[in-house]
Image: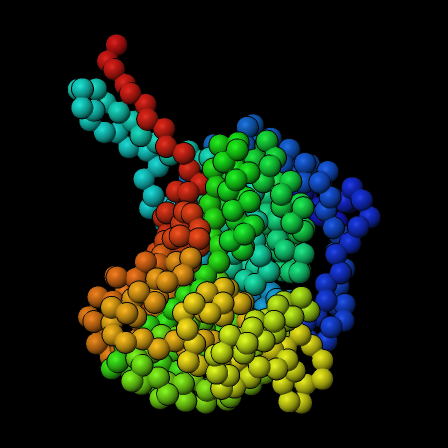
Length: 482
């Protein structure tokens, strides 16, 4: 791991305004692995000024969309050549098991970049319509302006691409603020942007804390904020944007349900929930951590889920055999352990897990995969986002009851339905109030389909053509004959 003494501002490396640094700690060893420059508010101001100049006077927003598409495809080529390095960085800085880091953290963003480029190439950027009053009307789409993109630590490269690339394709300069827990992959991505030769001012990358994020959100030079993070912080972002009538997109928390119908096979469900609920060591906003099972088959499903979780390999994230790695920080581990204690006190039955360090592991921010059974939907472990390898099984009486339980939460981000009858699964999925639902699979973030939540899970959509259009304004021009 190399230290980085400079910041990436407006497409070039520059010294920070202060001497502050961010120390990157390995979740596995609990020791420092790198130090990078810490930006201050003055650095954010420089980045916004560069982006403002690029938008107001630079070539990027005025390029034909096809030229921006070509530039993004070139960036994707550069990205693909560094995928393994990126996977290793993310595994080291946030503890993702290396197999998952390679497939989801590193490979999926490259696929998304190319998919976004294809979507932008097919987008109708301007069209003429016959007006209702006999006059022609031209409807055109133009970039919204400077975008501040704020991402968390759990899926850093994926979320970088989900926010940065659609904005670039729309013609918007971007100031990207990654989390201080995961700056290393962000700096690698900044190097790729430099290598791609984008115009000055179009991209800045400033890893920083919440104070830096708040400064960007409130900055008068920013036209749109795209934020992924907790619901509590998202509400603050929305309030700040609302006060200035600033465009905003929010992808927030989740407490998603896997609805297991009465004809589902317990072993099949357990294999699916292994991914749906425990991907990225449970640190995923789309994780389906509430498993709703028929009351009559509760114990069958609990036994299958318990066996699955007890068979998971927990340990060194660099080991390809590892299923569950450490949590990102000591603070996050203590938060998850606190919820486990809470589940015990609430009366749920612990069937496996419940402790920090697995057998044979003497360091690192680990939590053993934990399953609670016989839980009630009013329990806090069934209502609040834990963000760790903790699943809660809740029994239901009939299909209507299952749908009510799935919706009995402030969130509505993801979910799944498990049944050998696909038509029945689709019918149930359509009844669930959630932005995304999978049938017989965890919801797959398909770059062709819009992604986002309802209720307290967010505002707006990413991915699909909708992800690009969120960075566009629509202008109507009425034309009369002279």
